[in-house]
Length: 204
Image 1: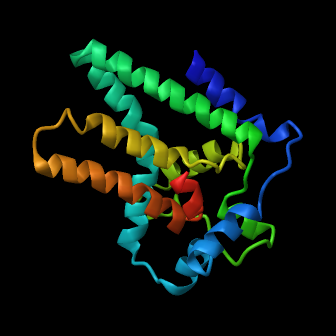
Image 2: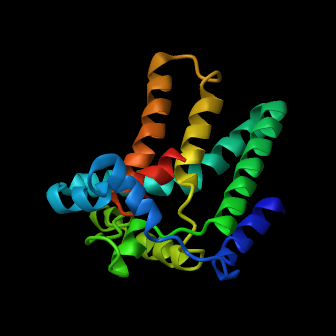
């Protein structure tokens, strides 16, 4: 019930009269790196088609990994499921509170409004390379139905890190831990590259 409330109410968070912060996150990134990384990357790095596929899969995994992990824990270890479920709910509520108090525009939206250099929203580009354009259209439609200024903090990054930290003690092999850390690190890279978040969003 809490998660359904979160999913519904976050789409209303940008209509409560709080000013949208579109310049400050970009300015923070520019102060840290001398330029806005998303703008610089998209302007200077020509990515191969396979990179679009990686970006799309990593980005879309956010919508599947947490529910799948919850389902596995529900079936195999109820106490761990309860612990992880509490963390998921708490993180979702913390994100919602932040969205309401500090609505912030992501790079693609700031670029559309001419506040930063050119940025293309590339998180769904890989579906065409995979021969699944309808999947991309479905996710694009879903993105359009929620709050576009819920960029701070990056919950994509937060949930990827949460999965890594929570599953760290559950796995037995080094390669599994390497995958967990790789996933937690890949998510912010993908988000910054694709125009979904600034670096500071992912750090927060």
